[in-house]
Amino acid sequence: MAFGSLLTLLDDIASILDDVSVMTKTAASKTAGVLGDDLALNAQQVSGVVAKRELPVVWAVAKGSFVNKLILVPVALGISAVAPWLITPLLMVGGTYLCFEGTEKLIHHFFHRSKKMPEQVAKELAAPPAPVDTEKAKVKGAIRTDFVLSAEIIAITLGIVADSTFSTQLLVLSIIAVVMTAGVYGLVAGIVKLDDLGLHLSQKTGAASRSMGRGILWFAPFLMKGLTIVGTAAMFLVGGGIIAHGLPWLHHSIEGMVHKIGAIEDVGTFLSALSEALLNGVVGLATGAIAWLVVTGVQKARGKSH
Image (cartoon, rainbow, N blue to C red):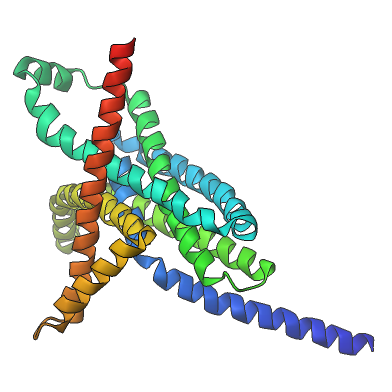
């Protein structure tokens, strides 16, 4: 009897682990796009600090990301059990924040920088902000951004395991949280230290190593510049996607447009998917602009009232 109970228990455990494995793979594939955006955004956020402090900054953001997920996983499980209808509104708030942050970056780049007097720019270049202050600002900004993207990853995963048992939900969410965080920040660490690798190889005795090192040193600045652009664009793509999915009428409208584009002769699956991303980006830009106008208006009104 005891042996039969043990076999039943082992069979149940194997079944749970099999379900966890399948659902984890599904969740990983569905959150891969967010993972790419997360990588671009965080590589952009932690770039530009003093070279010897790059890895400590990445590690500080990674620890913040783990804390984010330690908060988000139990909260997601609690909301799923008590008030599942809250998940979408909370995600939309996070998506709006991403769009707002992206809009601020664009406005700062295209308008605020051009308003500075040449003397002011020269003074800022001659006396850059203290590295510690820069690090703290970058870490805080990266952790805030990571919280929104982590929330989307957890929400997508929760949707996949919604009909499973609590233990399966907990295991899949925990595995996704750990694997995604380790994967993103491992890659971010590699990207920000790419120039050090190039310098190391360029000082080797072998001609092939030196050539490779010089190539990496030439490529690294373009990669970081590209990640800055991709990271800002990702804010609108991810944020716009969250907003669109949260508004059924808008989501169906985008789906209808994508379907029409896909039905055009010679338009492939890639172009059809690209059109959906671009439409989400347009939604993100519009959301960010509205959020920025509202926040700016409130700030001005509060300033006048004081």
